[in-house]
Length: 469
Image (cartoon, rainbow, N blue to C red; front, top):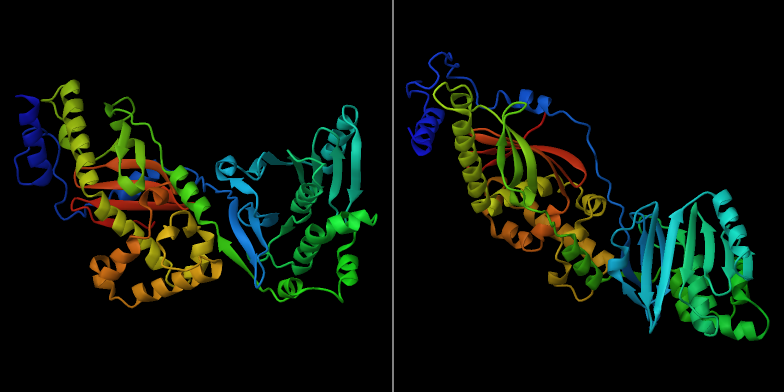
């Protein structure tokens, strides 16, 4: 009997318990009433592993705009929005240079006719002091001062500006001391480093200080006063009678964070999965399994997994080892192809299950799970995409979905309109595939989505059921 005939007989037996068991006559029949998912807990238990909980350390770019004034800064957000820095928006940011930054080290590159580089790395104060001592043996020290916020500055001729703050060493290079405006902007970039409150730059005194140093620093330098080394409250006190509208606007939080759309488009496209395809093969060294690339669309690509409940094939005395592998290989390959044909339907179910959980607190989920990384923000019908307008849009969309009857939502126009704003490949980048089990009637998918452990059952009809222990 050839492989095709064997496959037909085996599949007939798999999907019909009443077919005579000529392949495994010695194997007793199982209880016909046994639920097909009864073995799922045991299968998952065999694959028990520590949750990796991948933490995404994100550095973001947006704009900080002052109301009633043309003054605009780049707002650099570091370490998942824990800290922020500002830089005049006349500089062009190189987004790609920061995509691999971590909490341990990283770099920001920007330019204005020439290249500037801001590097950082986590280090102890003792390590910073030792490094500065070593640099003094090579370069001439031209600046050394400490601010009231415990920022320690060192600058070396023909080298760079160094700053130690909040457990990090910053190194800024590419500037020239011959351009005093540029020189002050490099210092104010470092001076502006501060923790963010609810992801917003709420330290208005510090913003006011940075604004005044950049705007009036050169005038005062001619008078022999270096505003970089002034106390914040002293500097503001000196300007209390001549503060302009912009400064008062900062006091009243009348500034806006505008999303840098170009950055988020660039980041999204750079995040697309680039998995190398590995040919499928069947292995029986430690139980029946597959190795190679099994693609599941939004749920990612799985490079290993168990084959389960194919007892008619596993224990057949009629089939040789090679024939069993050929038969199982064909079944696995066909199942992958069927899943790819239904990938949009599978993806819609996964996304619907996720967003339904977010209805109670959409803004909390929006920020915690970083929807901004997979939303097509350029498609939003907003005149200006500020954080506030985007948050309002999210709340409005979630209310629309919430008002659709649950049994109708997946086929509703409202849901499909919302799906148009989701970049599927960018969302897939947030999925960490772990393990896949293939049975004749369903798949068991083990993965992490947005840093959270998830197990799914994909049925014979491609329905996706979330499995809870």
